[in-house]
Length: 130
Image (tube, rainbow, N blue to C red; front, side, top):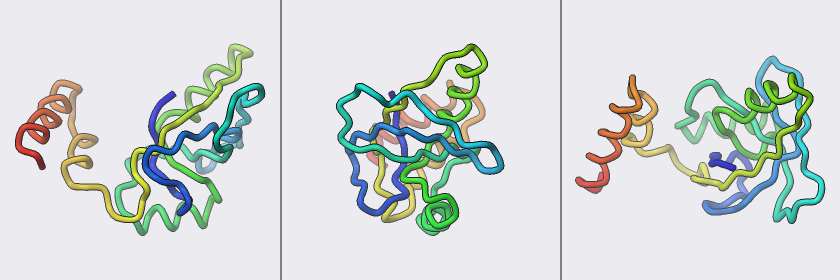
């Protein structure tokens, strides 16, 4: 369970998605364990090594990969689990619909060098309402 940013225009903030395929650029597609779940939506998830903050980047990634959403970790978790003979069930809540760029304060969280710095930046953003 986790969060992902929308690449597909029909996804909205708060949508719950089960992903049956995991993609990562220049890597083989991985299948997930999606049977038996109540699934509001099935789709393809792209794992990116960097934050995809710009709306135009999301449009380009959607056209290039046909993925429905993007995250930063699911592919690598699934690959590691598969090395132990296990499969990942991948559920994500859409955190942002991708119709506009991510706010600068969100991007700043991902640019933090340490988890402590990330927490400090998040608290400052909450307190100052930025």
